Length: 277
Image (tube, rainbow, N blue to C red):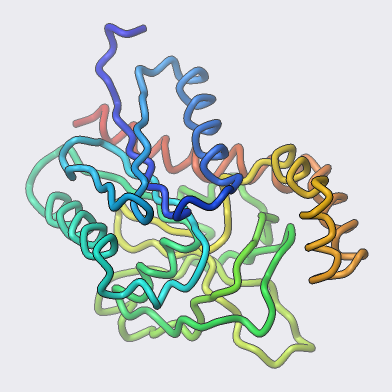
């Protein structure tokens, strides 16, 4: 197996040292993908916020950037964010050059929000109450034809866990930059609030989601069964919401399907483009 050329993936950890399920989810998806496709695929983790670690842009073929806690606005001008945005700019310049070997990147939740701020794609604010649960996400017309959402129903279900949101898409900016809004939050006719942007394609090689496609049902279940976490969720969202989440986690068409589909679809595109180059 190791005589195959190596595919190098960088996982950029934006959790700032906070315990989470996301990093494990990314690693499991990559290990499964490597086995299933018999690839010589390896990954390295960079602790971007806590240790200010950022890879050299040309050292890796594929980039995955995690979610994380806290405000996506307060980090503006921070040392880690400057280094991180410098990396993003280099990746973009690389992809705009005439090189055949393009760099694909997937951004999740917190990194989705700071990228929306970087590009000026809409308003970023604190939600009235945190969104938490296994919730439906609706595809736009562009989302329904994007290969990353191939084999996903509309709406599909995913783990949503965020206190912040990116709303009110600036359509003029989307058009100027050639970006596409791929998915939006569930419709709530009884609530007079804007629906959050949930997935955006920044360009041919960069895609992002405000939800967590890496979340796996068993991991979230184990996490929710911890006494302090259970109490926290019930205090914040109520018993009915807690039970609904457990029920939805058991449904193979919901979280298990999302985890087995979206990031693997992204990897299919990235690896195919890498192999062709």
